[in-house]
Image 1 (cartoon, helix red, strand yellow):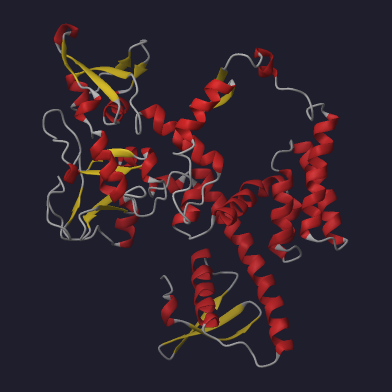
Image 2: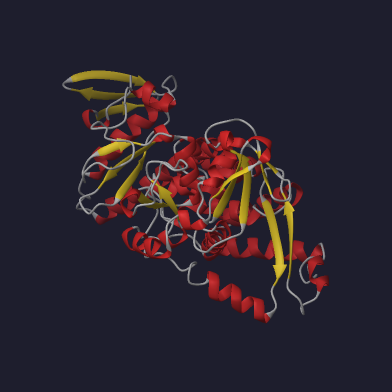
Length: 452
């Protein structure tokens, strides 16, 4: 059974065993036979008790204990990297409503951006630096050195990675600080770039020249795209004037770097979340209302039915509905979505995405019909709209049972992420009660689950 951290207290230990007391009853845990869950809960219990203790009067004792505790913390970081790596490799965080592993680390685990990036890098590189992983798990290498090596080899191929790992570990063993090891890691990357002739070699795309703007894209195997390009001064001014205001940090809690904010700003503009676009999705009425017939773009690109329905919900996209014989029935324009004035109000009400755990600025979000949208059945009234980022907007429509919506006293909608259904059944936890109308028209303070 799961150990309840608030009820357990360590009373004594010897090698291979640990004794705990629970309401005056003794329980023995065999460390080697214990499950990972039991060990994590036991560690949480000890940490809870330790956090309430005052430091010893002796400064020398405090120094010694701090060094011992830091070493133990490094061992915990090794275990944490293993768990994060498994979550990242399987994409489990997306089932819980987090678009990326870093978003999960920031929102659910409360890490700052730099710490989330550091831990994720170590988790992803552990299999490429086996000696570092082994020594970290054995307590022979500090977490600081381990993350330094992981960051240094992240962009090296496997052969160079193995050589760099050996060199950097040797420096650590010689007593060089983690900062100096990091500097040497940068030097290793520079030497490799010089060896391969990539240090000063211009990118092949620069052959296009600099008089005219150009962009090239390459589709990756997972459906994403690599983008390269050059903008002449005139087009660069348009770029800066359009994206720079949208790419500013939303506030002190916005921990995204410049590249992430810029990509989000570009995606918002292209999808019509901030400005109009000219995207038309051609589909049958049955497709928009739940059918399986695929839709298509004006250039003939096929769009799966489910994706077409999601696209049709994005502001700035016009669904051209066709009846029998491909007769146009309805062409919805952007005006059926939130007006500029309504969006301005929404951006005032929602400084960030309505999902409580999401930090995407409201200026980069899409307008969401809280109760869903159906042709002719969903008035675009300001009290039925909220702002959600593109990822959570799609998540809301694909996983409606994992979004719990409430209204705060000021009339703002608050979206909270719920665990996946199988996790709720396993833990015996259902969604919060007081379920109200699905269109979100209940008075402030009521709660409801949205469903398509």
